[in-house]
Image (cartoon, rainbow over all chains, first blue to last red; front, side):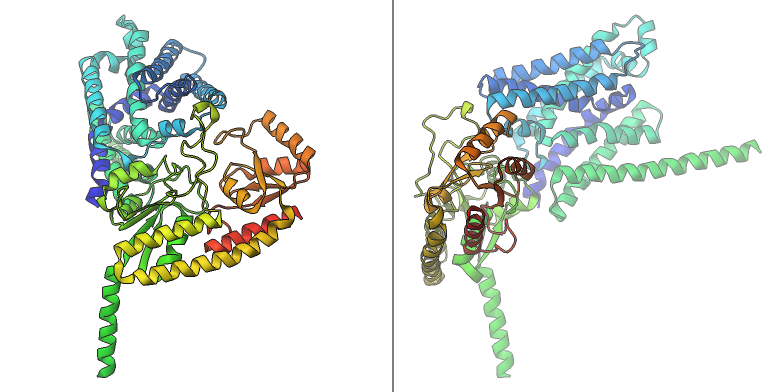
Length: 280
Length: 299
């Protein structure tokens, strides 16, 4: 069991903390599907590399994928205005479908089967290698430090946009930094874990945290706990019942969220009944 | 008393022989089916891919790694069909017994002359396999060669049962030789006829039975059918009066049906793998069914 599940477990312990933190931003900004759109943009970059017959392991191919992620970052930071008629989620959805459709068109000319794109978007956490884990850990640590150093600005832009404008912050630039770094993290994690798992790690722990706590630090702690529980629990279930690992983790997250929501509901009702007693 | 002793002895013998059973892992169901013909009750056969799954894309589960880790023998195609999913599994399993070159590794393509080897591999030709077309087991003569290769490997690893494996191979060989007459006779009236297939999985079958399966719904291997290509296929089918379109369980049958309704041809459900069609749990039954279905459609 350990020989098979060791590195997946290491990956689920060492990597998701950053996703949970970024997830708090994403949920607060109401841009739930940004990760899938970003991953698809990067995949479009890889399609282009396929079309030009580049070696996909090469730096050029990586640079093209990164370039497309940055284009995504520009699109999302330019369209995220202060008061906008068009919700950000619409732009994200449009970017996703256009990138996905463009990938289909490019591939039909490139004549390479969709294997590469499948690999890009359907990573398998079960087959993660030590090298992949350490590379991503290094990247995530760097991004974590970047976010920590500029945490005041990043938090202000996500959680109090009006405040950020009032303080004269260059909101659009900070948005761009946020999206650019976010795209890098998501794209690298998607490759080893797949789109479904990245989405779950971003959104479920954040929603659980928001359900149970008000302060950001507490939300983060709850989120980290949920991420660990769901990841490791899901891997165990996948081993015992021989299920595809990524899907097992995602469904474990779903079950955890239902459980947490019930707890939150119960907390809420108790608070209300206590409040009513006091008012009598 | 005598009875009890006998039971005890039998139990111990069973336990011992269960202990000694070779663990054979096959990547694909066709190899698994051949391994069962040769090993019968003396081996445990585990097949990774399901018969209805596309052999190019197989979803890995934890048990795959466990099986490969515990394997005494691994049978794979050896012609890049499993390229997308087997190498990472092997890397995780780290089992020296099934490394290439060891008696525990049977690469089915060894000794097989692969068809359609590309002169130069470019991405422009589609999702082609550099070593040649890897869908070779559907040729019964190649299946015999693979079975013999499996028998040799099992005999080398389990010399005590070598005669048993050898006898089972001989039996399989005799069955196939007899069946080849039957299958050949059933296909004889259709010699030289053209058949359309969704994917280029049937050159070996076509070659063995004198058919031409050389028009495909996919414009290039692995590339989904485009409207203009389908229009071209429909025109060709009408011009040559082609009567049958072969699809496999993991292909989009609606595309074949659309082409069939435009040309009056029949859609024939085929499978490269025993178990991929109902009632085909062995290799011989599978080829029986393929021959019968195609003959019915071409009549």
